[in-house]
Length: 121
Image: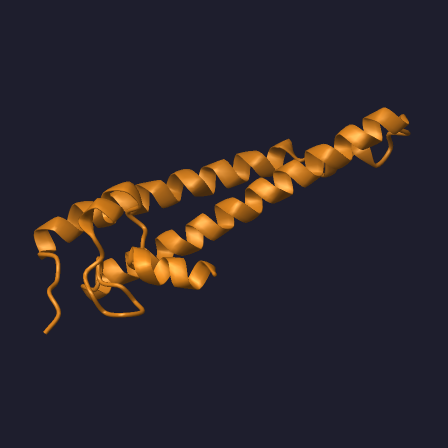
C-alpha cells in the first residue's frame, strides 16, 4: 500500500491552496480590468497609431497573464481535489510519494519531479 500524508497535515495544506486559489482569482479579475480592450471608451476613440500599438501590446500582455493564471488555477484545483481524496502528495502518474522538498516549493504539484520532466518533453 502507498503511504499517505496524515489528515492533520492535509488540512492546512488544503487551506493554503484554497487561499492561493482565491488570490489568483482576484489577480485574474484585476488583470482583466487592465486590458485596454475592455475599456468602453475604446470603441468611440479614434486612436493614433501609437495608441493602437499600446492597446495591442496591453491586450497581448493581459491575455498572456490571464492564460498563465488560469493554468495555475487548474493545477491548484487538481491538488485540492487530491487533498479531498486523501491522495495529496502522491504522484498521479507513478503512484509514488512526491518528494516533500518539491511540495514545499510547489505545493500544487500532482506529479513527482521525474514524471513532470517526462511530461514536459
